[in-house]
Image 1 (cartoon, rainbow over the protein chains, first blue to last red):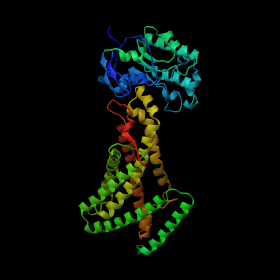
Image 2: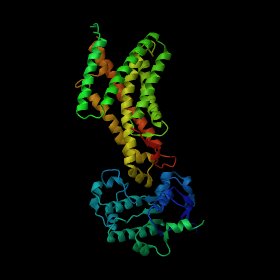
Image 3: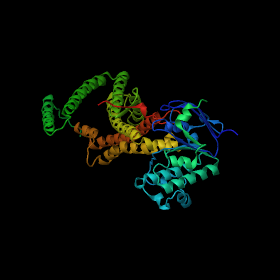
Image 4: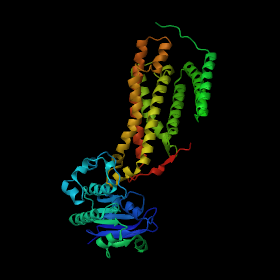
Length: 202
Length: 269
């Protein structure tokens, strides 16, 4: 079976070496490494948000064979700092999430009518996750997605993501500095430090 | 009711300039830190307008298309340069000037030709007495609106970078991701124009109409001219700003719709 996501000799500014990586459907990789080592840059390059060398393909379709917005809808980057450009939460959704969707990440339905300035960073992070998942991306690039969450919410987000990957035959790369989270979700098979990636010859 | 215009002497103007010098001193005593610019701006006004006077009487006498074109071109270039000068963040390699020139010539210049050939119809249509003042009014207003619109766009793009990138990451196009900033820029550029239109005739007496009345024209005729100018200004500022904001926001992205703010450089003050 061919890989879902194939990264070949990908390098962007801020990454010390080119990276090659194969990711299969339903895999959840946890990526770690010191700050400034190029983890976020790697994910942004995979989503074609920054300039880079090398190639990335999804289900054997090269990044450059489709438009950048189409690519980013399927290979979606979730930044560590969420950003909101309209007034209320609901305006940021094409399809407003159901009560059930929100409950899965521990949020109330009334949060949709709130002004984005009133949200805590943990609430924003969970809402940003739902905001992206509505497009049903095939690859999720999660940049410290649970960094601002309390332990209960973290577990809920983890469960949601694992379900999502299974139901959609999708895969994810998740940057996490939380050792316990890595062990819980991925180690030893799918844990990976950025240095290991740099060290692997393609 | 054509009456003879009362002439002002150079001596009168010199008296008025004393007032400006005094005001500069008062401003300085109040701690205003830009007195030098204040004086410099006044000197520039006097010198530029004097040259314009000499120039225009020359061009009016010559009455040739080449001279009108030349004066028009100089005015256009100066307006493009002024637009770029008002930007806190400019595009590299004089692209701000280019954006300004392009949006000015696609609106103010086109409107001028249309109004001269279809509405006013002087003989010949490029007669400097009509062409140059009309162009000046269109350029002046468009320049201000475009300058404000562009400055707003580039400053917001820098400040709200993460909000643009969040939308790009979600697979929205560059155009969609810039929409909220473009709206703000258009708003900032158009509000002064809207205010000017609202104030005309009640709070302010527009300059051109005042000039014609002072020169002895019938107020009703002067008003018709002024209404025409106002409608032209309303059109050219709106179209010019739309074009400039569109051009500028495209230049912020590459062919893969990635945001590139390094095309902007901070102006040295």
